[in-house]
Image (tube, rainbow, N blue to C red; front, side, top):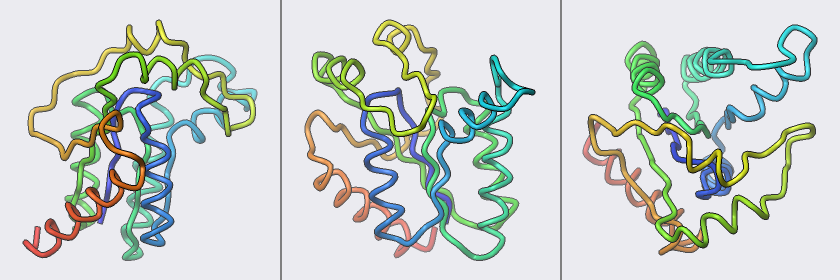
Length: 172
């Protein structure tokens, strides 16, 4: 199963994706980690563009090919990346579960962005203005959405686990 967490920075994606990966014993693929490793190399000192996503697609496909479950932590803001995850799912024969994480409370979302503790050495987190200016295209299908302004991490993870359980029981 390929489980892709999407949403703007500061919504709680990483907390939820890490928690779910640990619970499921899944492979955890985080775009921020890949992109920072690229920036740290001499070849990609500046803008890494979509390279981090291209690497993540193949890491996910490799692990799905081994029969594993993969949890991806990414912004996934554009249709191009959403279609690519769908193609990886189809190519590997693994079901795709899209989970969008939002924080409907703007004050809380801003607080999270501005007080975020960086857990990737060298990563400069986005500031509030860059989060607000981030392009985030509408979805062409409705992803399962959790609002972390209304749910604690434990509640959100329980809802996600329930969604995955229903998803699996329906044979999707």
